[in-house]
Every structure is written in structure tokens, then in C-alpha cells.
Length: 536
Image (tube, rainbow, N blue to C red; front, side, top):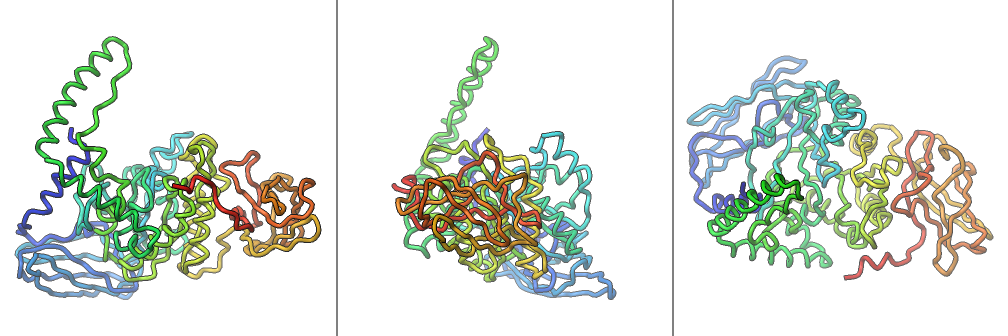
């Protein structure tokens, strides 16, 4: 079997060949069961013969009756065409007919809100991958919802921004699906829980576009222009240039022959090892794999998995990523805002953007500090408008970077979205650090989002630390007094800084909440340099 990298080379060759259009064909985002964004005009586009007349007709059934929209356009010299339709009200039922020399009819279409669900493995994690007490299956069995629609973008890297992506019907990738027990079991668990809660709260159809890939860094999801906009990130474009040049130097036919020969030998050796009860030898790597374009290459996933979505009209995005950047937390303070600005620039809209703060996990690499990455995620939420944060300090796993508790992640994302994107008056955050004053040997910390009152769940408040002028932090005794926390340590006579939750994983678990049941955002009041893991 060819690896994804060799398939990529073949794909690039196909892209480079002259396009040969025959029938009028909508972009892969436009299929049966799709959701078109309500309340605004929506572009619909695709390919046809150059100069071909294309007509898009939309029959709409709303509470107020039936209506028809009919728009025409002409395919450009490169075969691409686009029309803008709308506006529609949430819940409108639509039939979209695209006509040229042939006719394509898209059925069971709804008007509602569309959200992009992106990031790395914790966003990619499917419902079926929640095996504890058959949680995923039990959830899927009750998930049937005709007002929730699912779309999964196939994993693909690319050297340049792509216009579309391949459709993998067997894997239910590249087409809209109605949410049923059979379809949702293979969908993002976080995405589903988020969409389920949001759909219930808004009572309008919700479309979810999952574009995610495990183990990938944020720079891979940022366009070349987005990285170029920050001088501190220019080195990523230089890295991408090297990878693209190396990829282009590979002879696809020769690489294919070499790899197939290696695989043949490996299969024989593996069969022999199995027969003798020995360990299976490692599968050979594809020739040129180290140099070829991969999912860690800067901009490669933006090009292959985000660019094809633009300019499909969406409401906003949810994002669960950061593990692969955890050793570069100081840089993430620049990189994450750059990614958000980049996507907003490409969509030409101030997309509401919601991050999941990294879950507690002790098994990280030496020198990696998750606390610093969480702080960088909080920084993006503080410095950019319409950016929210879902805190999950109570939903981690000490030894598993993929914690099973995905439902609270989706629930907290939905709360933040309801408050920030939709303006609903709901408490969406746990306590947020506001200010601190020092009184003798005590630090008095003030918070917003007290949510009816501050709470120490399960007993004595844990997770606070204080330091003196020496910058050495010591565990603090902390008590809640009204809307403040008073912290002190016998080892620090004159504290100058406070930290809360500044750990990879805490035992006992961090227990600072508000009465709305939401955990406090970890914070620090100092500006001491981050760890040496930052240094190159």
C-alpha cells in the first residue's frame, strides 16, 4: 500500500495537470444533508466547462411558506463558477438544484449555523474511541438528531492552498451526513458533544465541519501569509520551503518502486516472525519520508484541510490543540493569535474562536510544561476579541494524553459560545484572576466570574502557591473569603507573586470552582521567564 506521502506526490502531479471539466460539479462541501449558514448570504461554487452557463435554484420551505431563488452565472476560463444565495432563517428546509449541461440536485438541506471543529488528536478523537463502560456506543445510540449535521474533512497535506479535497465515501469523509448512531460513532467526540448542546440551546440546525489531525502543531494549520505576518514566525516559512523543495526532488515512480519492493520483503519477514512467535519487524519507511512534506510541515494542513473550506460561510470555530507545541509555550503566545487572525483574514470575518485549554497530564516529555502552554492559550483569549476558553482542569488523566472525559469539554465550549458568540446571559467561565494585593505575609486575590460564589470542591482549597523576591514558589494555604482568595505560606514572609494550577497534573485535583460548577482558569501574577525548554 502506498503511504500518504506517496499519494500526495501523485496528487500534486494531478493538480499540476490541466483541468478537464465536463459536467457541472459543485464543490465537495455542497452535498445532500448540508447546512447553509442562516441570516447571511452564502457562496455556492464548483466547476464546469469554461464559459458554461450555470444556474443555481433553491426551493425553500419556511414557517411563512414556500419560496424560490434562481441565480445564474458563467464559468470562468479555468472552469470555476460561484453564486451567492440567501438569506435564510434557521430551520428553513432547502432543495438546491445546480444546472448546466447536466443537473445536480441536493436534498435534505437545512439553514442553520455552521462551526469548524479543528485541532489535533483530542479533537479528532472519535466517539468509538471512548471505550470506558461503552461510553461512546451508549452516547451514539441516543444521538439521532436530524437537526445536527456532520462533515469530516479527509486528512491531507499540500504544498500550496487547495481549492477542494478528495471524497472518501467508504470512510464517510467529504460529505454531509445526518447525525445518526451509525454516522456519529465515527465523528469527533468533542465536536459532537459541543454540537449537541448548542443545537439544544439554540433550537436551530447546527452543522459541524471536523478538520483535525492527531499530533499536529499549530504552525501546520496556519497559512504562509499568517506566519509571515509575525517576524518571530518567519523561520516556519523557511522550514516549509526546505520541505517543499525536498518533496519536489523525489521521483514519484522511483520512490513507488523502491517502497513496494521494501514492503514485499517486510511482509515476508513479518509472516516468518509470526510463524516463529517472534516480534514483528518494523514496517519500512517510504523513501524520502524524512524529507517529504508531512503534517508537521508549516502551512501544510492549512493548505490541504482549511483552505478548501474558504469561503464557505461559517459562524465560527472551536479548537483543541497545543500538546504538540507544549515545549514552545512562549512562542505559542504569538503563534496562536497569529493563527486566529489568519483564519479571520481568509474568511474576511471576525470569526468567534474558542480554544480548549490543555487537560492535566503528567506524562509529557522532559522539560515540557503544560502550565506554560495553558497560560499561552489564556493569553490569546485575553488579547483578542471574541475568543473564548474552555477550562478542563477537572477532566484530565495523569497517564493518558487523550482523557476519556470529552463530554464536559463540549459542554463548556457550548457555554462559552452561547455567551460570547450569541450574547446569551449564561455563566460560561470559572473564576478568572483580576488583581492581587499583598498584606504582610498574605496575598489577597480578586476574581471575576464568581458565578454566584467561589467554591473549594471536596474540602480544603488546593493548587495555590506564593513566592518572595527570590522567585521560588511554595505551596500556600488558601482560603476563600467572599469573592477573594487569601493565600500564604510559612516559607514566604513577604510574598510578591501568586500562582494557581501551575502544574502539569495535580494530586489532589485542582478544586477551585465557582457555584456555577466551572473550574478556575490557572494563572500567575508574576512575569518570570519561562522554562529553558523554550531555548533553541
